[in-house]
Amino acid sequence: MTKRQRVTAALRGEPVDRPPLAFWMHDFAAENSAEGLADETVRLHRAFDWDFLKPQSRAQCFAEMWGLTYAPSGEKARQYTVTYAPVATADDLARLPVADPGSGALGEQLAALRLIRAAVGPDVPIIWTVFAPPMILPMLARGGREQALGFLREAPRETARAFDVMADTLAEYARRCLAAGADGLFYATNVATRALMSAEECRRWQRPWDLRILAAVEGAPFNLLHVCGAGIHFEEFADYPVTALSFATGPGNPGLAAARARSGRAVVGGLPAKPEIAGMTEAALLERATAARREMQDRWLLLGPDCSINPDTPERLLHAVGAAVRHAGP
Image (cartoon, rainbow, N blue to C red):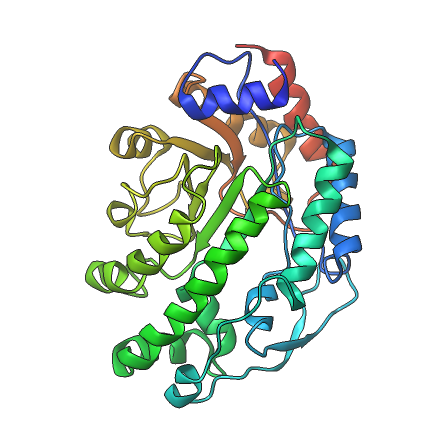
């Protein structure tokens, strides 16, 4: 099967010659320009021959559209430093403007996507990262996640208006991602956990804006929803209009087969993420891949990590998984 055939079949639960496989990781030195992100993505594509690509846009690019500034580390495995966060009060939230997704940091991301698509050709599915508004807000808030969650509870009117602005911007950005060559979104949130909010709060602050953004790309063949963390509110997302679900198969979260049964969607996962993967042996990593294939019986499964992996994960581990999956057969 070609990569596109394999991914399409897996998303539909049809027979595959083997499950599709991909990993993704930041490179904090390379991701600060369109050319750097594109070059590193294409390098990974050529080195590992993954079945689909999830280029790792820098996490802060969305918050940059509303005033966040940062200093890059210049090192592959060391994160950036925030130099200015624009939201100090609820009044600051109320003043956020709709942004032009064709300019600034998001315009740069679109340029990277066009470069990547041109380099890898039409057969490689590409999913492009978009963060949900509740995931962006902590990056904008000077008090980080604690202050951002406080805004949800203490300044709901200003927060809802800010999320409207973000959703309008991101819906248009999502449409432009498809036009630039993406097959769909890697749509992510990292605050929808029982440790951070109730199910009712999750329903109130995720769903309306998530669905508005996802509606902009509802016809795309490969939209993936990633709910990050332990103890996620899985039930709040089980009916989302996406083709695949991604989450950590850890404490408080469903297993792959249970998530598939509950949602009717394909699952992307089965492999460990940061920091666990970097310290694993090849044998342990291969056993995780084998266990995921066994659990799903090679149907409705795309092998990938629970979340992004360490930037300095030993490449021999990634090569070992690729070789084992390709040679094991159905």
